[in-house]
Image (cartoon, rainbow, N blue to C red; front, top):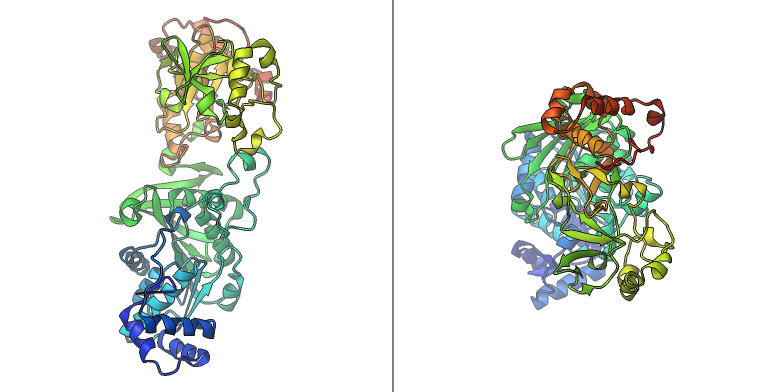
Length: 586
C-alpha cells in the first residue's frame, strides 16, 4: 500500500489502525520510544490524513521515475554490502549522517550492521522519500527487538542549504560516519529539468571568464555535496563512504590539492553500475578517514573482489592517472613549447557541416546546398583520427571567419550564395544556447585563428581512447579543419609536422601520456594534458636513425634545424609564437 506517495508495510498499517490515540504529541512520543525517530509527524493534519487513507484502504499515486534527476536508489543488497565492508574496516560509528537519504536503505543497513550508534541524521528533499524512510525505520523496529535505539532525525530539507555545522558542533568528539548515495547528475542538467534543488551559487569552484561560460563551471551534484561535507567534518574522528561516479572522485582529489582537507587512507572501490543501478556509467564507493593526516592520492580496487587496480592522484604537485607508471616517465613532465589548439566550434552541425554527394554539397538535414566553394573546407572529427596520415576528409564545413569576432558582412558581398544559404537558416544559429555567441556577428564560430589555416597539422582525438597522433595534410590545396573534439598544432612545412608526429608517437611519450590520462573520462585527452609534454626531453631520447625508419625523405640537416629551432630563446619566451614560419609546402 502507498501513503503520502510512499510504500507502507502491513506491520505499520496494523500499528496505526490499532492505536487508540492519534494525537500529535502522544503518537510522536510513542513512536520515538519504538523507533527513535524524533517528530515523526510535523502536524496533526498529517496524522488525520494518514488515518483517512488507512480507513479508506486506498493507495494513491504510483511512484514516479526520478532517474532523470540522477536519483538512483541504492538497493538493499548493495547498501548491506557497503555497511559490511565498512565494518570489516573496523568502522564503528556513534553518529551516522546521510545527506540525501532517499528511501532509507543505508539507514536500515546501518542499523543492522553497527551496534554503537547513538544518533542518525537523514536529510531528504523529496517528501515521499521522507515518509518512506520513516515508515521503513518504524517497520524495522516493529519487527526487530533492540535494546539500542538511537535518536533518529529524518529531515525534510534541501541539502544545499542545510546547516550541517549544527550536527558537527553537537558531536565534536564522537565517531562520525557520513554515508550515502548523492544524485548522479550535474547542476546544469537539474537546471534544465527545472529542479529547484540546486546550490545557491553554481560556480562554486570560482572559475571565471571563458572557463565558467563554456563548461568548467558545470559540476556534478555529488561532487558539490561531498566537498561541502568534507569541509564541515574533515577535522572530526570519522569515516566517509559515498557511492559516486568515478569522475566525481577524480574532481574531489583535484580539489584536495587546493583545500588540503584532513582526509587520509583514501580508497576507491569500483562497482558495476549497470548491475546495481541499470545505468551505464563508471561508479564506485569512495572511502576515506577523517581527522588525521592529509593525503593526496587514492588507491583503486574492485569492490567485489577487492583486487588492487592502481594508485592515482598528486605526485610532486602534478595530477597523474597512474602513480607507478608516472614515476617511470616523469622526466617527460614539463611544458609543451607552443600552444595546442582545439578545433572549430559552431554548434550548428545541421547547417554548417556538409557532405559531397554526386558533385553537390548536402547538409545534415539532407538538403542540397548551392554555395561557392571558397569558404568550404574539409573537416575531420575525432573518429577520423586513427594515427595515420590524412589527406582528405569525408565531411566539409563552412568557415565564416578567419579569427574570432571577425565581422561577417563580407560574405554577403563576396559570396552571395553562401550568405543566402546561411541567412535562410538563421533560426538554427539563433537557437544556439551557448552564451559565447551572444553579441557576436552573424554566423560566428569559435576555435578559429591563423593556426587553423596552417597547411600541416599534428592532431589527436579528445574523445576516443587512442593516444596516437595523426598527420593532417592539405586537400585540394586547402588546409583541412578539425572540429572542437580534436586538438592540434599547425605547421607551415611538412617535415616539421612529420618530425613532431614521430616524437609524440614515440614509446616514451606514449607511456607518459598513459600515465596522466584517465581512460574513463568523457574527454580522455585535454589541452591541459597535452601542454604537459616536454618535447625537448623526448628529443634527448631520440636518434636520427630512428626518424629515418619512419620519415623517408628526412635529412640530418632537417633534424638539426628542428632541434635548433626548438631551443631558440625568443621561441621559449613566447608561448604564442608558432614553431616554424617559413612557407615551404613540401
